[in-house]
Length: 300
Image 1 (tube, rainbow, N blue to C red):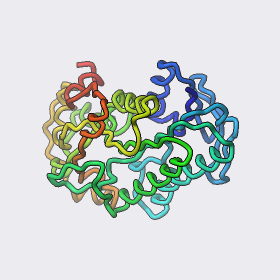
Image 2: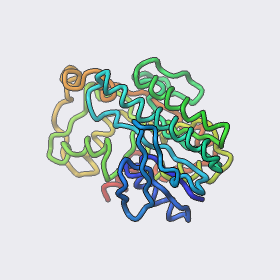
Image 3: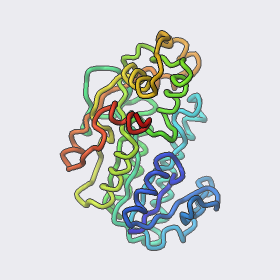
């Protein structure tokens, strides 16, 4: 199957591309520049101009939509919020318009979404796919993101993966946690009791592969492994995996709020999410515990 990926050069897209190729699929990437990586056919798109190279869609039967500005890459000013939403929603709208215009023979459209769809309140509730969205900024962003994906339902099967914190050796949230730990300055953030719904990058990529290949997958799934851990747990297990001491007190909440503003909620709050639906669909996680995931990443 030929698959078109937006955001293919990012953390998830790079790993997923390798897995798709290893499983016999062809892959095209969309990029803002013509330069290609690892000999992957790369086609230019320009969101501001509403343009995509039509050749990107030739023979494509699946689209994986991963594009989106980093949610934690800067303070949430009004302009930054617009960039975060538009980079996900308007890009999906553009993909839809072009796929429809070209009569692309799509079989499936798979879109990323965020586990923060449910909000970030730290409670004992475990959220499932039928729970309503939060009305905060990030919840609203996820609602709009998924609504844009749902347009494709008149063209193809649609799958949406509400993704938790992705654990990878090659970047992302874990790298930001591990860096101070490596130098002996790691510490839980705020209370440390906030939930951290996570997934190993290998499991996430396998989930995308399954969503592409298995026609029984449709609708929305929580892309988390269901192992409920806190920020304190994650920090301690990372220190153990790196064989480093953890001796500093928690970083005070007020410091993080002062530095990050509204975005600090991503760090200081977190809710739990269920993996029951994806498991019921037959998906089998390779890494069922945080310790297993970190041992794989750090080789211990």
